[in-house]
Length: 232
Figure: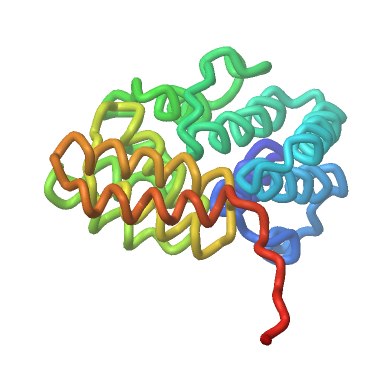
């Protein structure tokens, strides 16, 4: 197996938010330290970003890039950068993912993933996506929310939801899956942006009571903790 193929195999685990232990165990040969370090930094950065801890996210994304650049492998560098892009997309922050460093010399699969994050994937690109994203991308409009809910890994589910939103597929059922996913993980930034997206759809549909319920959830998220009081 070539070094690039080894990295590609490892990176599929990163895209799927696998643990570093899983990454080391997924191949017969030991995974180089820089790959493990980069994957670990990506995971910590994603969790921090989706939780609204920006300073930690910035430090860890930078560390992931430094580790990947040790290899001077455009595939590794581009995919590391795209993980940061995917984190933003999963929180409905539609940054430019088309100019990732190394992308022009990366594999067709990595270039397809960049276009996917930009909501510009062709049918050929869809076939090159990680399995976790492919099922949602191939689903018919009336089955997208179901396909999204079937994605096993929480972050992969949010990335797919974010891409659907970027495509203009503003489905209330998709928003509900995204809210539930972010809420279960305690990713406060993602919870907030997806609740607001859900609220906007409900208000546009005239569902005032449901929109007010969403607002109460936002209030719980954004309000400081209430002080405890002694009973009289």
